[in-house]
Image 1 (cartoon, rainbow, N blue to C red):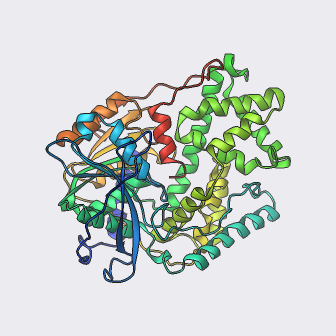
Image 2: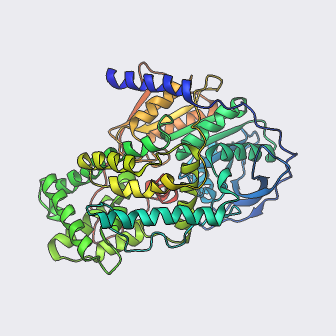
Image 3: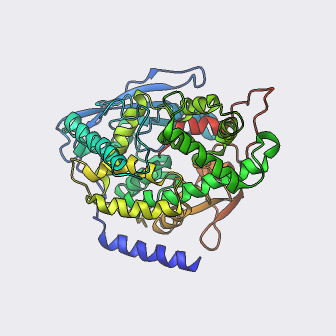
Length: 520
């Protein structure tokens, strides 16, 4: 523990010394127009309203070209309002329009009533315009095996990522220099101004925690409440963060194997997690040679099981898929799981286009493929589950047409107390990132779900976590403890095997994770 603290502390000092300083306030923007809200309610969220807002493509030239942000809101109903609460699902590339409805309905009514809960599609995303779509069909199956065991496999994968980077440069050369976290954070302040609010509150998940921290760095005096859930390590943006993920996802995949072994009566795969994991790799080898239904090969299998690292509510479906293949060579449940958890549609193409645009622009990446290969093989030898899959997902940044910015040093002593949430076994944003952010944000408070592995933990049914959240949103009170964490909550119960007689009821966890998506 002391060793980790020493390393994290040294990293913080290095970041403070090397990161590019940002001005506290951007160039003045023109007067914001009034927003015109229209009803866009759904059966689940009938009070949702929608609007659009013009913002500068380049905030350094506020009178220049304008782009459009799509917004949503659930208006406050209390006599006294605490102002807007902006919510973001992560990504980068995630749409937050529906998330506003979910957050407003998941919070206690008395708390939600005090806020205008505001969702938004960040620049380039979804209903905001222009919306990026660099290479439609980039994830059409079957893709090459991600593990480049032969020069031919490496060449095919490199061709794919080079082609994607080139296509993005060709399709969106005019906007790529402005698709980044700093520009998105300045957009948030444009939203605040358009809402007529002196300050805003913010709840961000995953990548959304970095976006929120960058906003707070730029505009600390304009932050009312700041909630960060499942926290990106701001000192690893973005190459090092992805390497750290590789080991964490492998551990989470092993946790799935342990869970399957604990339910041998349901799946009949035995009680030895290592033996079950060997079955999974046997399935992977079989699909590499003969993809299921001509669409689920080795790469798609990894895509299908990766969501289990984000949310254990998917484990019963993934276990059923493995068991059906082991016992009967039946790939039907696997094909269904692929469609539910991994298949990429046009919206997914947009999400990935924005993901790469932001990640590749936000920070420098190695441009020498030999560095990527060396680091990825080293990680793969220890953690083979999704290391190469993750590398190829991010590899367009080795060939990106737009030069990078420098990472933002989010260290901040000017904020009111922020509230941070983190599960100790989160794979997508490992625990060290929460500890680092807790140190960098003075006066912040860290609430930990001990032993939890899900990514996105508030408003999913854990009353201990949610009590801290609702207290903070009500009056700004945060827990104060001694040491590296301020409060500890027990982890949420593990899932149970599916009951063949009854369909599982939708849970808060499954609803939220459906909105958060993956790769965030």
